[in-house]
Length: 559
Image 1: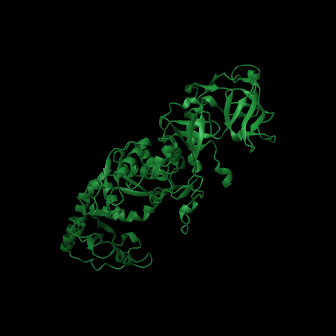
Image 2: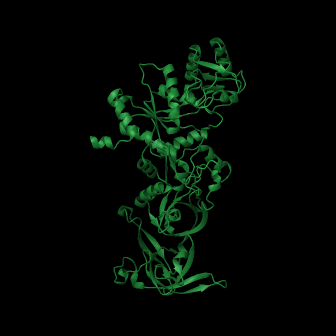
Image 3: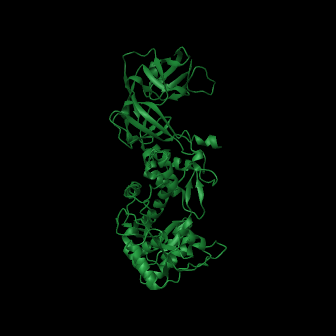
């Protein structure tokens, strides 16, 4: 038991303590409450895994609640994208809820607070209200409208609701304490006037609740037991509790807000505002551009739900913010794909080799394992002919002893095929290599059982038969920023740290086994990395996105 307790994170300790004291297992209910003002990113993914993970562990419901209280920024497109992302990650919500579902109840409670003298309509400008709030060291000063009568407040608030007052003329504020050391308790705004149509309620409402007013009350309506937020909401907890105090019925469950540290990912930004900038300025093509840290972008790049869930579990939850190196996320996708995807041969920077002693009209279909990690994936046939492509970097006319690839006079093995030896090169007038001429050992075919096939050579190269090669577009994606924490320097624009080489597009030549691929099919390109088929693929052109190289190419650069 002690060992099991020790393995719990601090949020699980909170839940377990509540279960021992005043909660029943049937009381537990969690929620994931995104605002539909953009696409979800990797930070949201870890929060999704956290809350839905608690639901699975305790067999408790988890609600998907959209915090849709700002019609200026929110759209149905984002609602749909969020639902797709949560389902793709492998989770199902108990109820699909919206803060807008509770607009009438929130309004009724606000009227109740006005009647009790705990809320008032303020007719000052937002600038004046901000100035009167004071500073953490200097108490705020009361609004000149703070002591309006209940009757006047009710009349003005109804006019706000009916759209009879222009935007910015009035707000509704809670009457708490302008001298509170917590600035958020200094008469916070509960409602503002917005004459904007809402994506769900249309033009029914002309006033919209602020986040702090809607959040806790929505938790209460849904009977959420534990409302887990990131650390920036810690100062909001006092206000969360104050608002609940005003409407709490002791016969019902009272939600509890607790906070955990945000887990930031290196070489990226996760601010929705900054991600929107990348899209709006055309730095990336869309919210699901494979360089984006959005869940949609990661999916398009080739990440799997399992890899993201494993990543989230491995970094855990803590009480202090930290920067997680993106290589940790990349490790989990390599670990996942290595076990489950077929391995094929694709050449990205081709140079032609001609096997001069191989018959011109001969084609062999050689046996190749689809994945040596899983025998159940079987084998495939790969064509071999006189003329092949290999990677340009796999050949040097002259090389030192540490170069184990193809060079004049030395032998290498072609993967699943024969041992070859380079004899000479053919160049153009500028000295560029046009062809590499080789000979092959006819007895050395892999798996043939001959003595020659068992001969050991130090280098093994991937290759593609030129007559059978399928031309593809290959998008080589890399990290979007060269700086580990691009938005950490307040005096520097994060866009200054953009990686100019975050995307390189090349033409690749693939073995014919890929002819029937579909979007999101995944492969290991042998010796190169993991790739996925992009949705831009058509009947006439296959497009691959590089998910990750086989190894972390940034490790040496940053060490």
